[in-house]
Length: 559
Image (cartoon, rainbow, N blue to C red):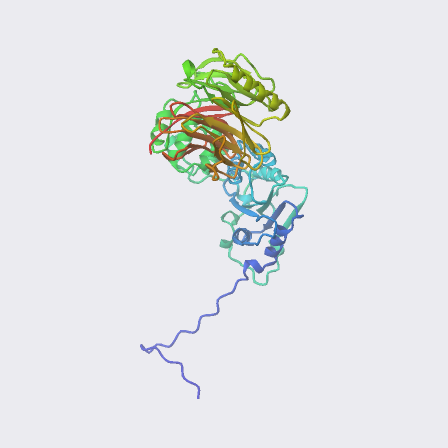
């Protein structure tokens, strides 16, 4: 006899059993997922893949699954890096800055990003796949689409773009389309919540959608505290008002502002980017909010400044090596002119009489007042100072010049009795009165060298491999790099300081670090926004950062 169903203790009839939960087909087993993985693993597939479909078709969920889904790298091939980037509510400028930061380059505009990715030497372990969601919900969908069309032509990246059916997609010579409206999943997910937040409701109109929570764009405190991508969208799309100079400063340094770590760092970057015509109330307000940052701004000069004047684009920097001109800074531009500026306020003190045709890639002041210059063809020039040169230094300079006329250099520095040169094969050569010392320090081109006269003189070199390395001529290089990033080193400068030697290093991703060589203090980092062309450490331990449109002087602050 079958057993009876037990009754509950309170005598009520038991509830009927719940219906079985509906089972959704796992995303990874759906036809769209298979098509996307097939595109991802095919080295000959088009660079652009469009994931399209109507609201609720699962586009955003599919891209989220792809971002989390791991694939094994084939033997001998590096792993593909996947970079998810939401486009909802973003301007083209915000998208460009976000992608530039994630890809290790610097870009002031969307066009700059395409050029930088096509020409950069950034170290990447494999192809990068950008997973871009909600194109149809961007604040500037047409402008963002144009940017993505340009990126689709760059060989080092591939794009997966999610967009709703009916939205104009990016253009490319070849495109793979995964249309989820055609996905014959036997049990489709009807829940729109599994699609992107920007993939619900009616199609957006061509005009920009409203910007929720937009701060007062004339209030420095509100701007620094807000979401920087929202501020970028506001300045790019909401108004042509200059907002007292805040808008110009934000657009000058925007990539660094979007990547800054909190309101204090944003206030510091924004302060360094203000032009001389900005509302005078902005500087004290920003300085107050930048107080927790590890730097204090001494001064900044920008393109268009009149009082004090901007000294021009910076290609190379150097600090004079003592004597009556110890407080002067050498600033070289791309035309081959070297100006002298006072460290205290960037006021001009004349220029070197010698001008290098074709531009300067490095300069090296020497203790006797001579300035050595390296031109764009890797040849050496010497500009004599007022003091007479010892004959042995004259002979040394002539010997190095003869060598570089046959084997061009890529980087230059000077130290007492030595001239240091880097080459395109990764080696550093120290030409001295006692002989030649060499070190194979880098994989790829040496991009910068500097040298410091201390108890143990040392050479510091940077390379296209992203490493900064120390070496004392006559000894083996220090095996561990002093610093390393995935972008090439673009500039170095070292100098003795009250607390020990300091090295300033800059990379092609826009980051600058001030590094104590002997470990006697914290490393400090700064990003000005535009691409960094040159750095220098002054005798007082201040940091100079030069770009095509700015020259900034910072003092370390705090612990």
